[in-house]
Figure 1: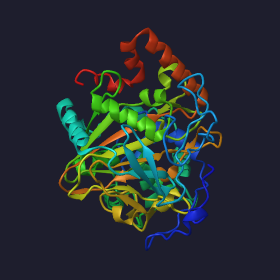
Figure 2: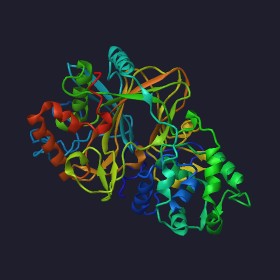
Figure 3: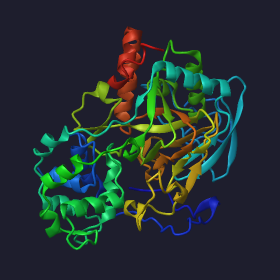
Figure 4: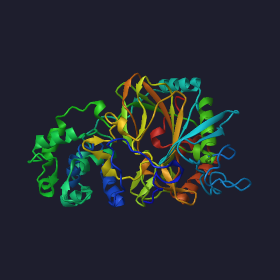
Length: 482
């Protein structure tokens, strides 16, 4: 994957890392083949990625007219900008970051001038104070409460056991796949890197050691498994051990409640206004924004958190985007969220904790294995948020937005920006309310254009049915209440 230049280059100057933090270096591991194998498990209900050991062993059986700095791809004054949402779609504007700390002003509706500050260049991340008024924040919370919230993550189930028995991958091949540094040993951090792939229990080094000891998987107790030790593992022993463990909500990857608020035609005027403001902020074609996901509102109670994750999936030929798959009818085996932009709103001031952390923002280099060093897991937002490179404090009405993908150099979506790794820090006191707007764009330009054309055509034929094409089936009831 081609990444931007190091953070020490350009106007920002050299970057200092937090004390004790190693430099992260890009891995040479073939991420595509790794992704394909892992997605097999994910699509076969490996929701509980328990200590990868268990996981492994189971596997055996925006709009023109905004002011401020010109956006990338927007063209010089007087030149044409990207056209409407379908046939004329040529490129996607990107707001320029310039350098960390750079401030620019944009008019985002009703003659309201907002100051936007660049927080990082990797990922390209901005903060906009007072994007929402206090009244708008309160209204979103009230609408979410009226709609009703549900747990963002349920406890793991046993549905995957039968599916795991059907997968024919040798233990040696799986071991080789998981052995990132190819040293013939499976280390704790090589196991822990895979917990980010599931929505099950979040495993710590202590959890792994306890499980090893319980099933006698690590005779010498060094926390490292050789291939021979790996081959001796008994799946029934692991299943029995895990089945006897009580899993608390605080031990899951995500501990929160959420709901979805429809923002399309006929929605509450405030929700429509916010969507129009986002169009002006991002300068993306209105139809792209309108055909993206509804607004998600999330509540984190005291003790709530969300371990570091990506909002989007990687770009491989084996994957298709959830939103465009509705009309393209392609046969790609794996489906992922293609969220080009994330816009996150803070709806209240949090008494304690609750920051949004970007553990490796503007790091010089990236290497997944270096996220875990000496039992310090930078993705762990319950324990190690203070060790990340960047934390954004929740302030009512403030919005932050970032690009989850790099540019491909031709004005379109490129590779996944791995520096967009982020999470919600532990709420230590009070309650945290946030909302998310994700703007969906398919990295495959042909598919996105076809999607836009189909949506425009379908909207002309049947305005009510359009919503069924626009929204993923998981949002199908969102119109009933709002």
